Length: 114
Length: 113
Image 1 (cartoon, rainbow over the protein chains, first blue to last red):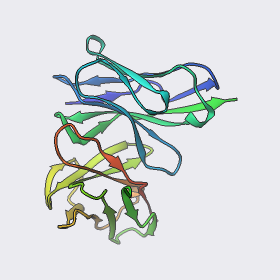
Image 2: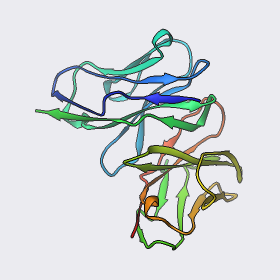
Image 3: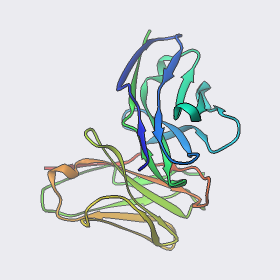
Image 4: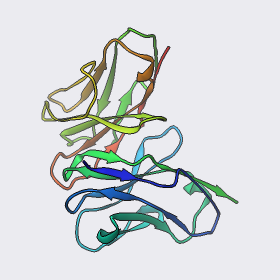
């Protein structure tokens, strides 16, 4: 069965520091992968997605992610974090390549210190 | 273009009652998916409707049901509420084709007392 693991429940970084959020997936074929962000009291906003092609994907708000098939990973990165990036981040995979049924990881809460 | 809207935003019910939540998708979107978000279980897929038909289903009991209308608006219903049904219920809409993106609404916060 497909699954997504986000090993880090909570990450704290200083403003201006670089960020990497980890995501590992379990899937038999090339997956459809997503990163979403959720601010308190809000729904989910898509940061970026990977379907095929270039394994380095650029998203909104200066985020990028790299698909590594050999490591079954899709880690999210940002070179310089802003205080407004504090939120919860979710990695997701499209179940059976169905992008209307997403399987989510448990999320990583990002805290940013000034 | 207006985003996904969900009503009501907050709801308080007691055990044994039933509840209906509503979701209006982005104009032109034909697929509506529902997710339950709880601190313990995280985000879990409930079901997806496309062109008034349930196209995908998650692993939830039959107390959870949904429907979609001809204008793509969707409702989900939970009967015989249990304390564990307290959650944020998120609705997402998409075009319904392959390789598409889901757009999420702000959610309905359901509290069961």
